[in-house]
Every structure is written in C-alpha cells, then in structure tokens.
Amino acid sequence: MISAPQHNRQVAAIFRSIAERLAVQRANPYRIRAYRKAADTIEALEEDIADVASRQALEDLDGIGRDLADKIEEFLKTGTIQAYEALRTPLPEAVKAWTQLPGLSESLVAYLHTRLGITTLSDLERLVRSHLLRTVPGFSGSEERLLEAIALQQPQPSIKRGEEAP
Image (spheres, rainbow, N blue to C red):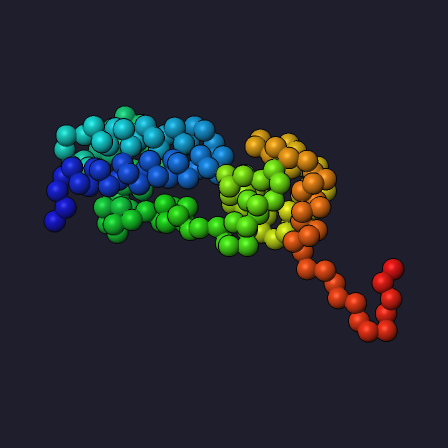
C-alpha cells in the first residue's frame, strides 16, 4: 500500500511533468499554470489525496477543477494518467533530427510536430514556403537557409539511364 504522502507526491510530480512538457510544446500558459498550481496544492495537503477523492471533495481544493479532479481519480484507479503518458511519447527520430536544421530548437520542433501536425520534411518545407513559420515564436533562423537545409535532407530523385539531367 502506498503511504498518504506518497500518493500526493506522485500526483504532484506527474502534474509538474505535464506542465513542463506543455511548456515545451508552447501550450496555453493558463493550462500550464493550472497544472503547476494543482501540484503545489496537492504537495501541501496533509491528508492523502485518495481520502479527499473518496469524499468527492477534490474540486474543493484550491486550483483543482473537474478536469484535474478526473485526472487524479484516474491516477488513483490506474496508477497513471493517460494524458501524461501521451505527452511522454518521444518525438519520432526523423522529427527529432530536425533540431539540427538552422533556426529549429527542440522546443520548436516539438511544437511543430505536436501542435501543428508537421510530421514530414515535406510538411515542414510547405510550412516554411508559406512564410507561416516566421510567425511562430521561437523561430530564429532564415527561411532561405532552412529551405536549403531541408533540400539537402530530402532524397533526390534518381536519374534513369538514358535520361539527361536538365
């Protein structure tokens, strides 16, 4: 059996981790702050969060609304929170490699992949060519240099024998 402070520490740690991962993805700052505030509240509790949940009093706690109460209950029933597990899923290696491209940081790549659904170099190239990338906070490079780097990364079409290159 997990001790009372152990439940509280685990839920607070998960909420802090969710907040950090959301911050990397540049999620809504109010949502990030809500997770941090909930973590602080839960850590400060003197009683087991499970006891509060059994009394159906989670929403009476400062900073805990219905959504966070549901996540706490999910943790108490299953030992994890599905939303947390989804955030923990690492970026695909091919996408993670984009951090080597000029002007793209790890947090920007995570944002492009998770929030904008950019999953291929072709998607990234279309985004850059549309000039929308320059509107995304955190892009610090030149669109031209990025397009050149993307072109070097993409497989070049092979020339069949008998055909001449233009």
